[in-house]
Image 1 (cartoon, rainbow, N blue to C red):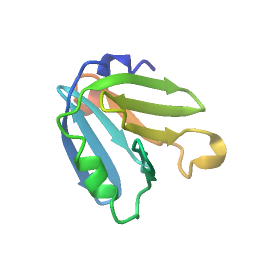
Image 2: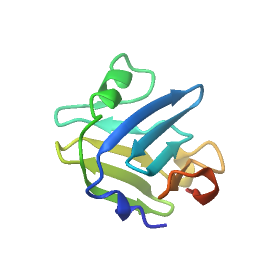
Image 3: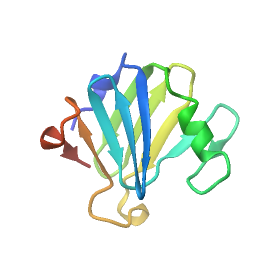
Length: 114
């Protein structure tokens, strides 16, 4: 799957749902069923830590500078300010058969799972 279409897009929305996270980039949408790490310039934050929500929401308005999905390895979305959303896709790190999905159009029927 190619997520490079996110490059140049701005993070427009962050939606925390009961057990997953949606990031909206223009029309495109990335849905994480496993919580990504937020890698900030000085430290990283994981789901459940006190500043996780703030760290994710603070990125609204930032532009994507790089986006990569390596099957069986990781999905990373790097923003122009240096912040990275990262999620391991290694078998030993995932708890479910699907870790998330990507839809270039934002429509559920167009979503590809990773």
